[in-house]
Length: 453
Ligand SMILES: Cc1ncc(COP(=O)(O)O)c(C=O)c1O
Image (cartoon, rainbow, N blue to C red; front, side, top):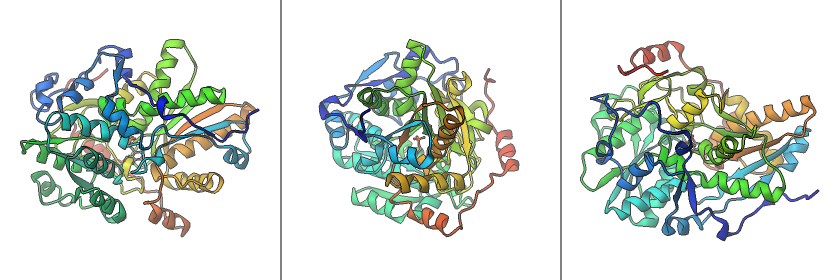
């Protein structure tokens, strides 16, 4: 048997199109709704916020969408990313499972986020936009967008969730290094920020409201989102397509695919191309979505129409939600602190095609540390949740005495998250409980909208 550790592709093997999984599932039974009229949303409703090419991708019935040459050229800076066989980890866990990970931490910003950032910057530039404004949780998306704006000659303004702004000064410095501007959210620059001043640790929902408000009020400025929407999940599918080609090099096919979920984009990136194979070829691949126990959207949320932001400016989306004004506790995986999830992923969970798991942060960090000690790479706190789930699956394979093949997305490195590792090593990291009472209260404030079945 080959003892290869890294399965590498050539630049000529970067995918030439993105996989549009929603096209396989037919027209969505529950379209997004206008926040005021509650009527299905039309492209003209989104036009003030997003580039038209991205709006078209959002609702495209095409199974595949070609990657523009300029975007493919930008991808060449870090793609194809390596697929690793975690041989040392397998030994450390004493498991018969074969564990593979796709490593997206090799991008300049250190995560999967530039896969969509460069595409969004490209289409906006093509349509004459001068500036992009966005929110960021852990700082990964904000830094990825700053990088992409720098590459395509756009201005970039970022609202960063307060707790991450305080915990991650070097992510801020990174955004500024790529010439972006960054504000602590909630800020006093917007109506939305001022209205949420008492939630000083902030949340993705609040930061989204601030960014949307700025974009809606300025002529040559558009909003961009780093997750959740169809076009964002679409751009991430380069990950899974490359992984399929690399697993072929390894002579294996995954039995289980694992990814962490904040809004769902890295999970979609690794899983959707493999889900297409499962749907078309009748394969039995299992898909596991790992979320934080402190923000348990898929495992504890309700399936309902809700706003994507806190203040209620975005369209109503059909998704599992904890309530748009629920503020999750400040866990270190800032990128996973979101009250909802991608509607496409929620529909797959509802159909039973994807299983969800909730992971407490201390057990995620315990797994991340073991991973780092076996494989060397220090994972970001977000994929640490996926790693915990991989460990559980490896243990299950051992108990069953089966050589199961597990593939997961190591969607970012943790080099800017060392304060969290220090806290864990000092025994100071806690499992933050989310407030059931606050969640119930937030759910009671869900907007009036048609019930979902
Ligand atoms: C490294 C990393 N992983 C995961 C996420 C969660 O986002 P998503 O679920 O869209 O991949 C983030 C978000 O900021 C992130 O930075």
